[in-house]
Length: 386
Image (cartoon, rainbow, N blue to C red; front, side, top):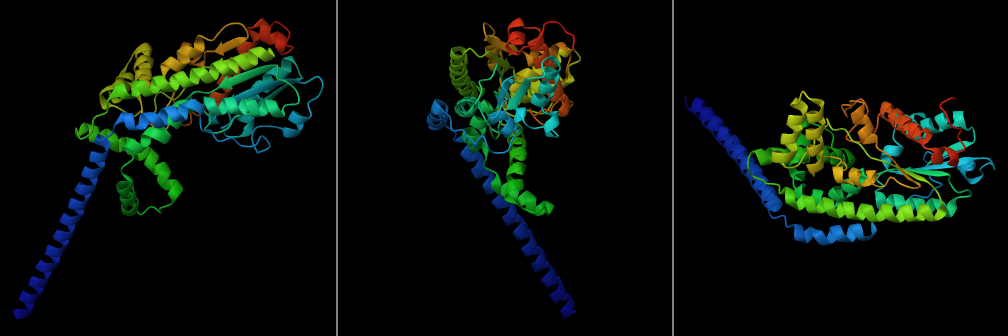
């Protein structure tokens, strides 16, 4: 009888220890969560405004040597034939990422143009993460190395102007859950590695912030980010205007393409604007309401893994049309086609699938054929015949 009592006493003690440990874990979790929420609620835009202004005053894009690997035939570039008609393409990762090099829109475009003029060569100087600061510096870098001036320059950029700012300056405001994400790694028995952790954090933190808003523990003030977006757009305009002056002085026509993104991929930010508009868009039966609400959701996003361009940027680009500056309104063209702006043309938030690259190439090609000045610059005969 004594032994049975001892066993029961041992079990009760063990249960007590387990309960106490569970309570301790819960208290630590609540403490860490409370502290994380407290740090987020302390956010003061004025503390970050200086960093924003500093970044957008000169840009901080890293440049790689032109000789580095990329979509560029260096021998052909440095030793062009006398009859070659060079076309340059600049932008970020959207202009270089595809299932393989032959599927990138610059390669497809070259194939189409060469059917009209076999001397056309399209050179892609895109680099991942380049914003308008990086593109401008990349362009200057290329012109110092060039052995023949281009007959046409194509620019596709804009997403990184927003993504780089939010990722490098403002994501840290909400990135207070490293402890929770490490714990989720441990409980799911996933092997922890730093690169995988950063990818995981990039995707999960927005979901956590969304949940905390529903619990009314965090509130996001859209008016703060409207000012941030205006500041980003002002810097973008300065860069574009400078690039346009450089090209005008050289007499080189340029094409700007309105950047587009996957509107069906869920955006993150204020649940009362971003999430609400997103849900209304997905539920809409009318195509105009579908696009309109999803664009509103995109325009207010701040926490999405890749923050996409806002409508004012594309409106600005559309207004550049005139003289030797041309605009391919890709967003408008996709809307006219009734596109769903979904995974059929985007592999994630804004990188193209192979089909997306084909559409971009087709839009540029059609834009060139429809403009006499561009046809003349590339030595392409009028008419649609091959």
